[in-house]
Image 1 (cartoon, rainbow, N blue to C red):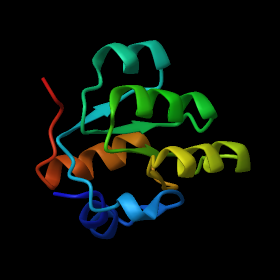
Image 2: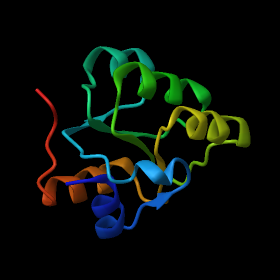
Image 3: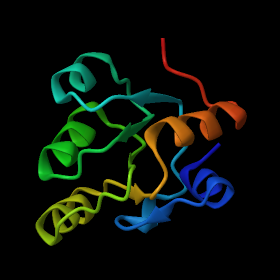
Image 4: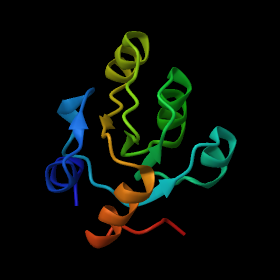
Length: 114
């Protein structure tokens, strides 16, 4: 399943790099601690986090993540959004909780990468 399909089905709002919404999602990583994300997220994962600062973009690039969902109503600032666009990182947002979005992804068949 690709990012566009996921965004449509669970009503996520793409805010950056919409040209990359066709990217396939291999799995999901859920967490807010940046060092844990760096250690545990895998290439192609969709990362769910409440973090919305530029370091999220850096980690997404480093790990070649499919995209990042900023949950809980968080929004990237203009500098972070520009960096994400420059790097081709898809940032999606939602007002829903991380827990709710993770449940919806589970229902779509998206599982954690092992």
